[in-house]
Amino acid sequence: MSLRLLPQNLINKIAAGEVIERPSAVIKELLENSIDAKASNISILIREGGQKLISVSDNGSGMTPSEISLAVERHATSKLPDDNLVDIKYFGFRGEALPAIGAVSNLQIVSRTKENDSGWKIDVNGGKISLPVPSSAVQGTTVKVSNLFFATPARLKFLKSPKSEQNRIIEIFKRICIAHPEISFKLSNENKELFNVPSLSISSEDIRLQRISAILGTSFFHNTIPVIANREGFQLTGYAGLPTFNRGNSSMQYLFVNSRPVNDRILFGALKGAYQDFLASNRYAIAVLFLSAPPNMVDVNVHPTKTEVRFQNQGIVRGLIVSGVKHALSQAGHKTSTTVTDAALGAIRVASNLPNFGKPSENIPSPSSGSGPFFKNTPHGLNEGTQLLPMLDFSPSGPKAPNDPNAAPEEDQFFPLGAARCQLHETYIVAQSNNGIVIVDQHAAHERLVEERIKRDLIQGSLKSQGLLIPEIVDLTVEDCDRLLSRKEEFKELGLIIDRFGPSSLVVRETPALLGTINLAGLMQDLADDLSSYDETLTLKDKINNVSATMACHSSIRAGRRLNPDEMNSLLREMEETPYSGQCSHGRPTYIEIKLRDIERLFGRR
Ligand code: ADP
Ligand code: MG
Image (cartoon, rainbow, N blue to C red):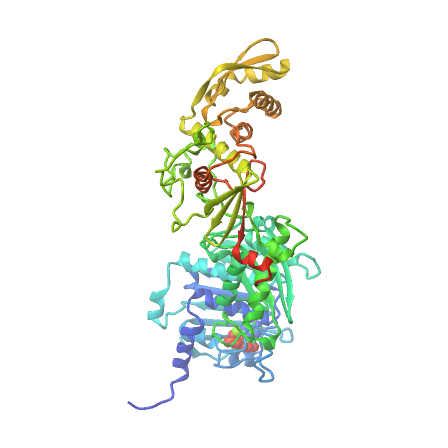
């Protein structure tokens, strides 16, 4: 084995392995070069996921013929004028992208500076560099990369389908677009334009938000909260998504350090930490965050692709992200006590900010759309036989379920709402959850459960009515009576059987069984009021959310009912299985959770 220096071309191919893993990495390098060249307009054309062709044209400074020749030599850069690796103002500086790309593809650069009255062209084919020749060109640079990895067939095999390479290109493209709203970008595949975002004037106040909305859609605009926080020379700005606006993966998390899109574990971890109290662990927040760091506090040269960074003090950065985002979220959400320490109480979770139990967070099936898959889903062994609602009829003896394994949760089982410990003021159920205290408003919670059950039973056709021992006469106005009776057949489907009993009164013969004993006069009046506000052409099923909410409101266990432990646990278990049980029909939370660590904070233990 003889020791030897590797030839330049081989070194470049090795570098290519690190710097340009796939077409999207070529796009990233070329875009960064155009941005460094102060371009205000950049357009990109790709073919076959970038493998056949990537062409990037800019209107930047351009290069003279000697600069073009130098640019494709290894370690030639115009971006480290004073050998200072700490205070880096450009995106490039390693001087290896162009030679690496040239080593593994057919690379062509055409460029013209403002001073030159013609352009120049150079070709590099699998590492072989030609001499620059004159070529017609406007000011700026066009870099064409064809047949990427033709010179390294092994790499070629690692490429995914053109579609999936294109998707990666789009991901990189979006990030760079978001980081540079002052530049206009265009991206086309073959003849199809994929993106065309105009440049925005730096003076426009919400330039960033405009660009983000152009790239990520306007829903982003409506579902995010601005973030702004400072700590020891670091500044965090951007937008954090509302917890309810979440995703199943991190693809909607855009993080930038000094305008560089980064893929940094520490930063993603901090973002996860910020949402920990608001999101289930398998859900991901949506966020676009820009961290600006003093150049001497961050090293961007730890990885050839510069997508990872290293901070001198990770703690500061992590703390800034966690507290900055949490603060923004607390501003947007509920207002809690202003007396005790705001920070600690601000962390109290309100159910309306939480993912709902037992349901996917998107695509809520409407009750009229047929089956609601989650209604049938009864994990934790809460089967149809263990109905909570009959139990809450409050027969004098009280419901007993001594052998019912669902009634009292085992200590070692995991229930999001915990095990009921006591009832306070005959209104609130206090439960011990895995790492905190849950307080349930029993009236609000029960109301929600009844409402969802009416909807479910109606869909399944299993809504039962219950004949009243003595039919009840309800007095109303003539108009209200007419209104209600005109919907008599529809009410029948809902388990409510009514007949006329005179010009201004009606008789109620049967009611939905699951409502239990209710104040019928109040219910009929409210239903009549509801009807007067509905469009005549709508059926009650169209308005089932409203109708069932009104019914549920009259059925619920009011505050002031004493519940035994089985009833309390049963209520908690049913809440866990019921969609939207986190809020009552009026949008108020049905429960809150206080984490142990927040309690500790309240007591100054943390
Ligand atoms: P780096 O960007 O790290 O300097 P590159 O290999 O990407 O290394 O580019 C080498 C040099 O070529 C750059 O330093 C720059 O001077 C010049 N260059 C590359 N692309 C352009 C461009 N689009 N416009 C003007 N100059 C460019
Ligand atoms: Mg570069």
